[in-house]
Length: 275
Image (cartoon, rainbow, N blue to C red; front, side, top):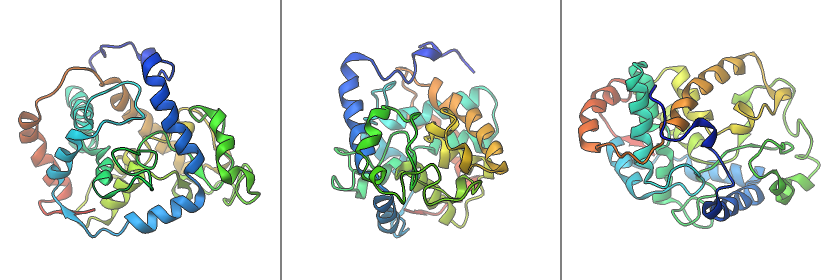
């Protein structure tokens, strides 16, 4: 893997002057509005799988979306996807993993049919992007800007404000409800896609790559099971490419599409995906 333009310790710095206010406001909204009840409503609303759209059309729609929660890159999201995939390709990682790098943020295309009210629009992204956390139990201090945890209404509800909350000890990640966003959305879209053959590791990478309080913060230990140790290994392997390939260097989309299209067809088929 090539050395990034920035040093590793310079990534995910949430105290960078001009960008801090916008990023911080994003997380204030996310933490104060993403409740257990909100997440259930979003799943019912958006996991309908009724919009057939081509993979590449969805990719190209990300050409106008800049992730407001990202302190490292102020470029359209499609650039980040290409950079992630190319980092894996340069390291000769498996073709399915290169594909995961290419599509891992594709759930952000939810903004096409999202709304300001839900936080799933281009203007209001607090239900679309950012580090996710578990809803239905106590918010940990490992969240970005933990001072916002107390703003979440669930933290005043005895059903949801304990270490376990609504969950059982050792229930495992797959049985948790995470804050709503592009990870869970794309995971469910691909799970519903009959011709999807992305390996389990790739699906875990898609689903949990934004779950920083767990994979980087070490939180939620009481909820984890043996399977989650394997997930953690996969996610940490993936995240070096998600983070450290970000740079101002812009890949040429049309040139790279010719390389990645056969790989996408190998694991996702040639038909539309239902979003």
